Length: 50
Image (cartoon, rainbow, N blue to C red; front, side):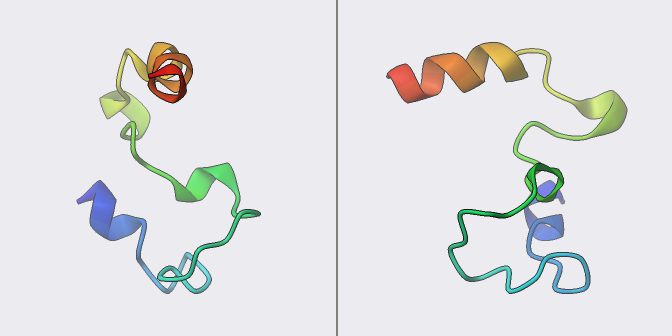
């Protein structure tokens, strides 16, 4: 459901367009709240390096 939430037009302005300046709260790739991925910060460094 996090994928679907990132495309909610009521919250995200033009969700199907590529925009560099989107605020970070729009992206929920790592989950949210109690369901946030424990490896979030490690992955943010390792994935671009791969």
